[in-house]
Image (cartoon, rainbow over all chains, first blue to last red; front, side, top):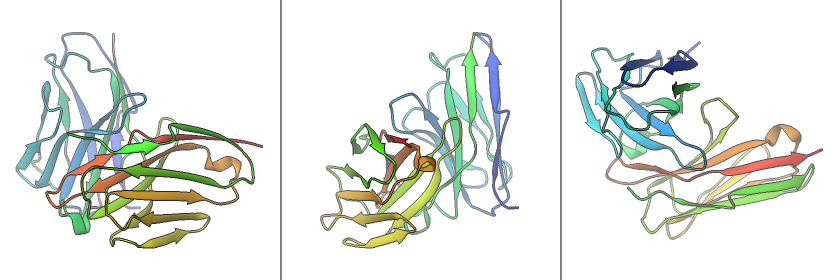
Amino acid sequence: DGGITQSPKYLFRKEGQNVTLSCEQNLNHDAMYWYRQDPGQGLRLIYYSQIVNDFQKGDIAEGYSVSREKKESFPLTVTSAQKNPTAFYLCASSTSSHWELNEQFFGPGTRLTVL
Amino acid sequence: GQQLNQSPQSMFIQEGEDVSMNCTSSSIFNTWLWYKQDPGEGPVLLIALYKAGELTSNGRLTAQFGITRKDSFLNISASIPSDVGIYFCAGHSNNNDMRFGAGTRLTVKP
């Protein structure tokens, strides 16, 4: 079955620790995205990648880092510099980032709680 | 960046009723997408719209791409309990920038 997987589903971290969230897709999509979701707000873009070995900052990139070494994988690291990291994190992918091919498909999400 | 204005924020309806929600923006979009999200899950794409004025259906769901390209509507007819969830609109512009509404939380009473 083709799709996007995120792991883990729930993640707990102590303040001051970095943590990496996994996102894998087998849809052969070029573009991948990371969003943050907070209660009562729309999704906010953290980072996106249009192609392997390339990525761009979204609206709220501060305190986060990403890599895109393989087409299938786009891990997100939440660093200790992120001031308010507790949130629901969603990964998505699309055929292309161009608007004509930008139907984004989402993973099941990772809920990160900082203790 | 500016998010989309989605309304209403929440709706409480009786099973069998029709539902209507909309999204507006001050900017023009080339694509409008509607997603549904169940609690603790990722959004699932319901309908994608690509042309101004386009009206598209997916079962009991109907969505329209506004003629001004600054708004979109989603209607659900004859609601059922499994329609419960949060519905998001998303708009995509020329600069590869996708924006999301804050969501409409739908509750359906049996």
